[in-house]
Image 1: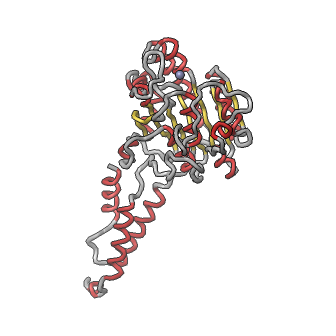
Image 2: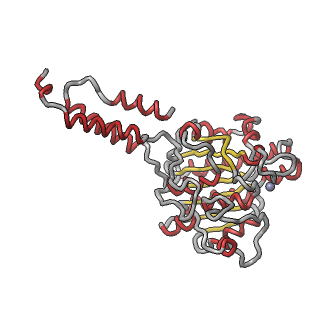
Image 3: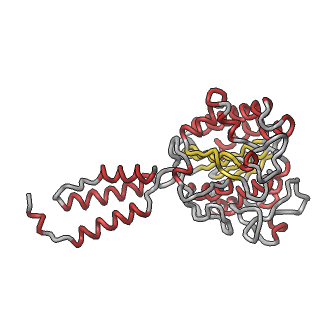
Length: 356
Ligand SMILES: [Zn+2]
């Protein structure tokens, strides 16, 4: 889809039948320049929001009338309801480590954090792995970008312990209404370039009453209200309104009152929505990324780095080439085609110039 649209735009931009070769060359250069400029991702502020335990069906079954803010992400941003949690484990803390480090859980290149409990004092991602594990916070801190993490489960102290020098503001509060009002007010005043916001309510209701229960759906609706407060804070601030991107995903879904079976699609299928600067309104992420068989939630870390024009996280594997697109981009075939046109033009006999 993206490729066809781009080719159509290209055809419209270049007057192919003209005998004025100078004009044709100029048109090609303008077309190439337009592609380069129009699709360059640019954000000054990126907020990653993780809605813990969010099944995509909890959004689509309730609809825009009940969940106007989730639907703003879908209608105004690029999205999929078919992103995936880690292949080997569908629990909270390991999947959040994946989002923040850009690594899968298992293997030599994985982060290897499998515990879903609050870590004992002195234990970090690095002591567990036996070597330093880089994250979005290292990359941002090195570049002088301000950072924050606002989390609603105590076990997120793992990140505070692991990146104490790189997270400028770490706040933990299980009351998400207090957490979000604190986050939005500080976001406006601090203007962090990189933030991570974790909202626990859907997961808590799923464990107590069942994922898909009335109480679970109500918790998702309450989360929608919190997202509305976040969107209002961003849109109401001149420093944030035009150049903020919000990436929303989840650590896992759920079925019954749990989510530990990593082979169940209800557990490993999660939403991934990208709203704001750089994101194409209403675009399907799989249509924008035909090279991806599956889009993983662990890609959000390097997507955030890409949007901030920062390098990939050292040692990461998810979206390590920063090629996850959230808007149509010039494909290499189009750039080669432009190069080919230019080459042919350079090699053409000049005599036709005297026609006309
Ligand atoms: Zn859970």
